[in-house]
Amino acid sequence: MNMLMIRAYYGINIHSDSQGELGSTVYNGNVNPDLVFIMAATIADQAENVNVDIIDGIAQETFADDMLDELAQQGKEYDYIFLKASAPMVRLDIELAVRLKEIFPNARLCFAGHIAKLLKIWLSSNIRQIDEIIDIPLDFYLYKMLNNTDVVDINKFPCPDYGLFPVQSYVEQDCLRLALQASRGCNMGCRYCPYSAFYNNTILFYDVEKVIEDIKVMKEMNPEVLLFRDQFFTADKERVKYLCKRMIEEKLDIHWTCETRLEFLDEELMDLMIQAGMTMICFGVESGDDAILESYNRNKADYDAIASKVKFLERRGVLTLAFYIIGFPKDTWESAEMTLNLALKIGSTIAQFSPYEPCVTDTEKELEPDDFYMYRNTMINHENYSLDSDEITYLVDAFSTIYNFLHGELGNNYHNEAKRKKEHLEMIENLMSYGNNMEAVCQAAKNYMRK
Image 1 (cartoon, rainbow, N blue to C red):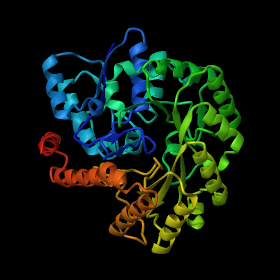
Image 2 (image 1 turned 45 degrees about the vertical axis):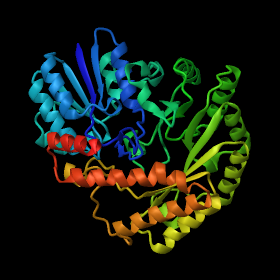
Image 3 (image 1 turned 135 degrees about the vertical axis):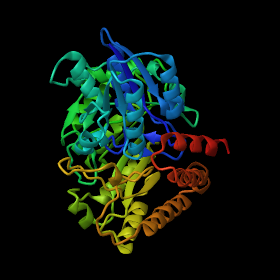
């Protein structure tokens, strides 16, 4: 069986397993490992009687039009083609699927990613070239398909094989960062987050001993940092304690980061995580207005306790990154100011202010590609907003500047964030005029990058 797996590149960098696997545009130049795509490729590569070709266009910086030309010239036939799509680029991904079917009419063309699930009804009715729309994570699908089973056992997944990918692309500021997981999914049910919807509001846990073995294998590639891409790393605190104790016992000596809910941690657990090698922790706070959060099923947190835990972590040399959302439909100038004041009170090493990015997770509603903005991490939403998009953009930029000024990070923020964001937005402005014309978009992106 011959397979082709593709993550496409059109000149815009996409972190395609973020935002609940809808994907998000990245303007800072860093290439993030798409762990779901990497795991799916690993499962296919290690299966018997399967020959798989992998094109990670983003990591390889191979434009989609050049990829098509090369595939047409090589004359190879495939039984299956898997295209992992993202929400910001979905219209171009659909055009790419059509073009792939022209080159490989006998291949079973499969369209994957969370965006495929959301657009399943529309795609089924409108894009005849797509043979199958995959509405579960791609690695889950391939495991079930290649093992002829209806049950996904993540503990039988192999360790992610980064040897199949251009690992040098994952170097950020001279630091190799590789991703792995100790669990999948989230059960918190916050309505602004699509992760719960894609994993049916459940969490699947890997056996601790499998996680330990995966770390040992990945250490052979000498990463400076391992990124635990769990959506809720400490959902089971006793299990995390055991994992950390095993990491210490095995003397793994690896730096790692995770994302979790900081308010649920105590000093004993945090101390154990630090001993096991944690050097950075990321956590969501989201808004300073509790009424807004409650309307999205987000429970109220003890912010004094969070601030105290941030101080505890930073005294131990751990970087802290807090996430905040600006521009919820009910956000006002006053509630936005509450969010800034809360961020200053909590005082994390880094505060990331992002615009509210609405996404419908109810798959029974018939969505269309035109419901999603091109190149942006959001839907074209028809809710009534108290703040318009220009006001939200102003607040995000202003809050970032204020926070970085107070934390002595103005220069670093300008060079690594603001300057690159400006260039990114200029490029998007240039590409917008070419619509869904994939070749024109790719050529325009190449011309822009040459400048």
